[in-house]
Amino acid sequence: MVNKLEVAWTLAVVGLLAGVAAYSTVLLYHIDSLPGDPTEYVEVIGHQWDWEFCYNQTAANPAGKCFISTYNLANNTVTGGALWAPPGAEVQVNVTGADVVHSFNIPQLGVRIDAIPDRMNHFAFTVPSVAPGTKYLIQCTEFCGTDHGSMKSLLIVT
Ligand SMILES: [Cu+2]
Image (cartoon, rainbow, N blue to C red; front, side, top):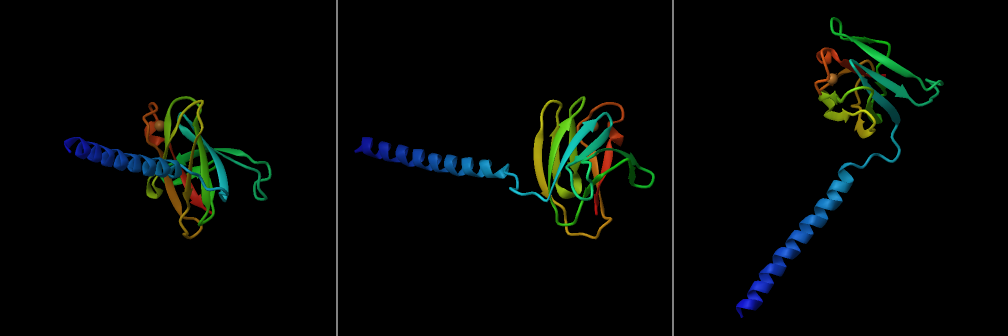
């Protein structure tokens, strides 16, 4: 009698844990899934101490160029280039580092992904449907040397 009860509660716990494991596995698999057809792909490269953005060929950017972005703290502008995306766009960023470990972060949009040399990390986010010209600060959030604090750029809604 005791034996049957022990077997029953052991099997009940095993069943419960197997269910939790199956549910977690499915959830973890989907949590990292990227959109099948993003509006825009951008390669983001962290350098000491600037962000570089590379775009695929489009009608607006036929050469598919890369831009090194230099941030000006005094007037919240960038020169050289930025992360440009239209409102509502599903943007997939492919993030790497050129020299040391950086971290690509857009705090207002909950975007944060490490930029690691010799590794390509992927992340997708949706640009809010806001007015063109809206800016979101991009900043490095992994200490990467003396000018880490000024390693910033902008996401500019086009
Ligand atoms: Cu940094």
